Amino acid sequence: MSGDSLDVVRFWERLGLPGIIDVHTHFMPEQVLRKVWAYFDSVGPLTGMEWPIAYRHAEEERLALLRSFGVLRFTSMLYPHRAGMADWLNGWAADFAERVPDCLHTATFFPEEGVERYVREAVDAGARVFKSHLQVGAYDPNDPLLESVWGLLAEAGVPVVMHCGSGPAPGRYTGPEPVGRLLARHPRLRIVVAHMGMPEYADFLALAERYPGVRLDTTMAFTDFSEEFSPFPVGERVRLADLGDRILLGTDFPNIPYPYVHQLRALERLELGDAWLRAVCHGNASALFR
Ligand SMILES: [Zn+2]
Image (cartoon, rainbow, N blue to C red):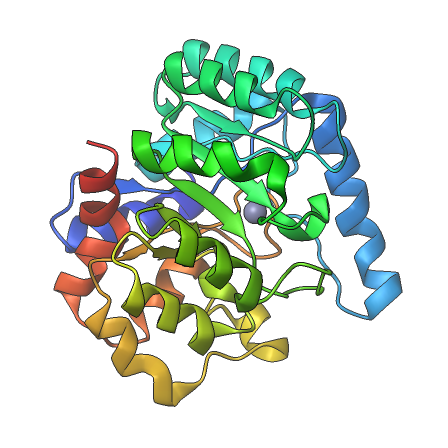
């Protein structure tokens, strides 16, 4: 076992957990992943924010790594940047979940003709979680084409991990306002706000306080990397404790510019206690995906 893996295993062993659950990991068709990696390679020169990907390996090796970390369940977050892609991505993800049983069957969507049909098909085929990326997809979650989709997902109780915060770059429909309007119409929706809503942390915590179905994932939040350009306000920490049953471990593996264990250490140093860490790294996701 590599030192990297040992560090992760020691983290959950100390907490007395059987392993951890990571709700925000990326697996996607090879040619799409290559484009994502090319994007992160270009981010450095564009913004001065270098983003060297720590786990740029073949799929088999990435899966072996997650398992050596003791990640019991993970996801295959994928998302379209235009119409005509989601149905194809969903086919790939269904096949992936079939051959990789520890991956929660993941699906996605885009406001387009036929979206209700393929979302229903994915739910019927056993999709456990959806991904919606408002910044890359550049769509309004209140687009009328999605209205029946939200109703269907609220009814089925299937969570949607949504990149709706304005980090690392804002989009036309990112920020708390569009999601707030969506939740006002569909208060039972199980939205998992990716990246703790970075950088609009406080506003998204307020949505979670208001709507019991709303959760947040920790993906990249609290790490040295994110604290540098988008620090979590120290004064808001008490709200993390109060929402301890609604925060889920997410990491963005493999597209992260630091070792996996750093995300776990970043949670540990919030000093919210071992019970909080056990809930965030295992218990809450275990209950949600039971
Ligand atoms: Zn991500």
